[in-house]
Image (cartoon, rainbow, N blue to C red; front, side, top):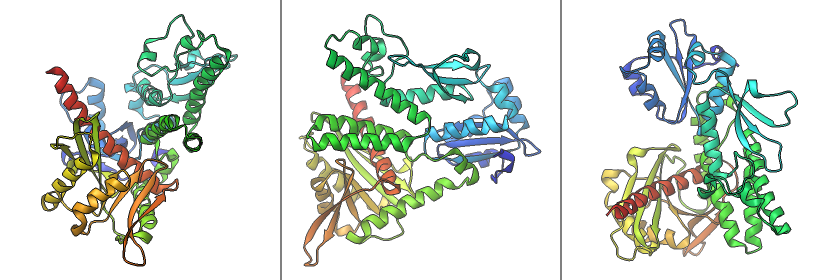
Length: 449
């Protein structure tokens, strides 16, 4: 589908309109006076990227492009991966003039996965592709920046090598980005251990191929099954490791929608977010009193290292999207830093104190199970704010309920894969990230001292 046939709102390119642009991750388009596409780009923050084009220190070609631009459009998406795939699709199909002139490489770039005992993940130009080449190629991508972003995101989850086996492990192995490193694997003398480690490496390559093919659901389903199998066999450390991989994977990819869906419906993100909220409400409403009109959701998390430098976070989502202006950090003051219950008690009291000036949430999610939920309920019970817990094991909602005899009880509901789970994980992962941010800053300051 060509850009010219997409129903996109074309907004006059003025400082005031750019100032009011959305701050979502997504794709933006500049149009000329005849409303033909001049340039297609992507950003994790559309507002900031568009504002950068209004600066006076632009390069010559960029300044020329902006001088011809009369309108802009934005297409919000739900993840960085989606913005990259949509940008690549629009550029490939429309060939806007300034995507050709401003791009940072002479020919499009591909991701190449070699066919070897230990496959390598590298980049290649079209000119490098030979007819007899047995490697697998993905692309082309409009810029090397796009390719590097994809590989950087994937490597943190599924480590891979860019080199053939050598005499010693590479530098990336020490950073956990090439693990298990082929150079280490070939040194293993025990045949059983060698085969097991080799399978682990090749499994990572298989996951990367699936992601680059757009088969995210299959990757998630496979990882989830592995985690559950480990738990059933009481291999809890292995299950924890897979759960961490799942959280990282979900953070960069969920939910992932085909690029053409955004092209057909530029308002798709709003529709997706509303469906997530509706599904979440339907899941928990049978067990507690909650309104259908949920707009503001807050999530709380604790971070500490063996009890030192404890911190907490409050992240706020409005209509399913994070609103960073309403985020709050908490430096925990109580002395027992490793006592999560005491820390949460402190946070809950401080949140209650600020109900008027910070605003009132429609729903609070506490990262944790019955104990963590109980802390918030004890402090905020008189506010009538709905509060639920989110337990990591098997991704379970922990919901305070009333049984027929009027006594308090707890209902645990495993969240089915789908919109509600997407929303819950996105909120929980953002709370983790924000809590760790202050925690790491405090540790850094302590080390500098």
